[in-house]
Amino acid sequence: MFKGFLIELIKKFAVRHGEFTLASGRVSPYYINLKDAYTRPEVMREIILAMKEAVQGFSVDRVAGMELGAVPLAVALSMELGIPFVIIRKEKKDHGAGQRIEGEIGEGDFVLIVEDVATTGASIASAAEVIREAGGRCSKAIAVVDRLEGARENLEKINIELSSLLTIKDLGL
Image (cartoon, rainbow, N blue to C red; front, side, top):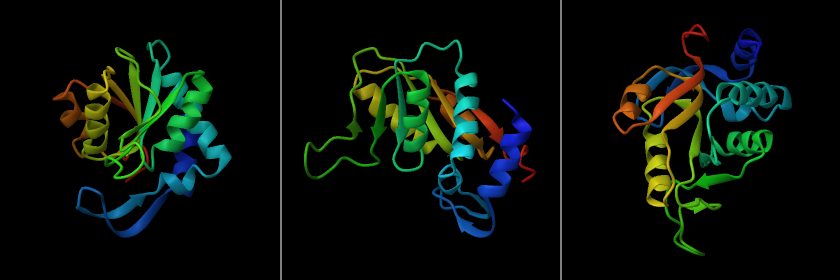
């Protein structure tokens, strides 16, 4: 992976300056909008190739992404790796099958969680809980960007190792 090229793409297409309220409730002077950035094929391609390289050597049965931001990453990485993906809903549906997982997780399947931006790790922790309740195993997650605001440490407490392609330091933030 050409880390420098990925940094330039993310800085150009995802980093926004201003006043933004994050999912954690904290106000930040910048926002990393990867959802907007990876609608561009060249950005998504670089992210997925970097993720594929980062997970080489891991035994993975499924890729999981929490709706909304991580779903395109889960789809693209699953296609690149040739394995199924699952979508984890933030909340159980109140209609239809009423489930939090779209797709199948087999008993004992190793599920890799993907995330666009990790801040506190709450979304990854929530996804891991759903995966484990469904009989899957998850001990690894990968984010495109780690904001370095405690996600790695919080996830270690629930036996999930977080890796990231980039951190805010790489982006000069």
